[in-house]
Image 1 (cartoon, rainbow over the protein chains, first blue to last red):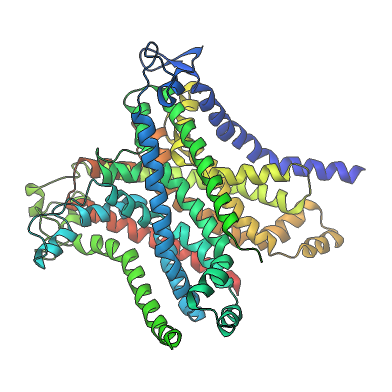
Image 2: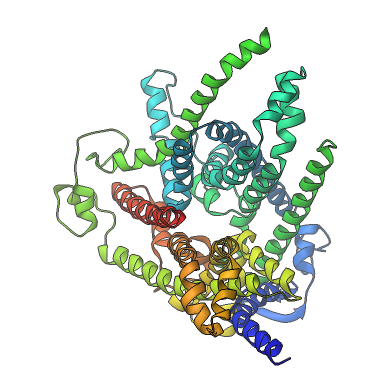
Length: 295
Length: 279
């Protein structure tokens, strides 16, 4: 009995620091943010402690124009953000899938080197990596210079400040997030299974669909979720590469907090962002699971 | 027949694709490095001739180019931002390493009812969109009257760095034989002695790895810091974002190159540590 309680004491001692810290500085702020989304915005940036559901009404449609006005633009921005995040996720998957196979067939040394090279960008500054794309995409940038020198274009393509630029930037930033989970499931595939499928007469595409894809599904799912979530909430990439033309939900939240100073509405928008993230991710998981052939 | 033909074509195609993939990852960054030595002050992307001048400008030196176009007008600001970043990263790393390691040890060495909850608690901060955490912390700090500065940034960083340390140390603990600790206890060492003399040395590579990872992530964090840094506590990434938003100037290439070199050195050190303890 005595040793039992002593063990418990040790456990409490080990857990206490992180519990207190995350309780106060992680769970606490998130709860307060949730509460804030139901408060009335004050006149000069503060809040009034009244229950106020019109913040949600402004976005979702029941604002009557007396307290707050409904504007479809918020839902449009939310939908656009989801669309761009989805496009980023699928394209990143497409970019990484063959690369994972390429590396899985290398020698041990080659694998180690390539994994190092792919992880390295994750450790280098995100803002610098985005900056590189500004140098490439802007009107006097590298891409336009090359195309001009080759005589393919006579005036700069407006690559910057477009959805394309934002998606390229996000793919570039999130490649390691997709690649690593994907690679770990590609790496595990037993070559004999592919051989067996071919010996049994399956066409390459059938082998891919019936054998390779289901086996790599855990990696596909993990990678997709890891790319989708930060893409949907992103505000750095659209503000660097999208300018004022491509506004995502993250930019809107930033605006509400730092410029419009309507904190309750900003909190509402980020609550809606979290909800749509959960909905889309669970829908995606559901779809993918359903498509998985029975083994 | 077609199948055999396809199979023959497959490998070179895959290698070609791999080369393109690597080019996609590295060409943009290499471009920045190369053009940081370009002396053309008007169009950054038209090569003039090789120069170190942007680097000299950066550190307050005088070069002929400085009169033409001087951008990072105060080297002091840049160095102050770097100082803030290093201070924050050091403090956050120490705190997060303690928090993450003790939780990892608790989770690996004890069985208790709330384990699922703790696993979730440590997982969520890593997948939480950083803008949400950033504004939640902003509301919290302002409401609680905590001054926005180095301390608030350190607290903010620790909320998610703890999870990274936890994961790295847990992985190390999982690969460890718990019988070694029992042996130490059987030989008469008390819990503290066992932890200090047996457990800690064995998990140390994981702890160092987690700490290095925290340091890099803290140095690089932009979004959360952006919301909870005060006027007098700008970190390097936030400062650079401000520079880029005001306009592209050659000095930024030089800053970018220096930062890339820095992160490559730290990342390589981390990987070296990892490979060394695998032997």
